[in-house]
Image (cartoon, rainbow, N blue to C red; front, side, top):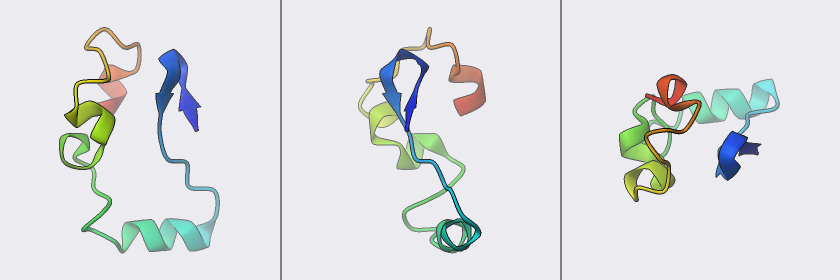
Amino acid sequence: MELPGGVLAWSVTSLELAKRVLGDEERFAKDAHQHWPALINGEIPQAWPLIGWLL
């Protein structure tokens, strides 16, 4: 999905998918610095309106 400012993010839309995501600790985690390429690569600016939610 696309968040404000054109930032792309995953959206889990069903219970089955939520279970798969929550069970896959290698590819998904609460630490955005570890698993969100756009943040890791500096593509999300510090002034982004949702940065507090992300971090």
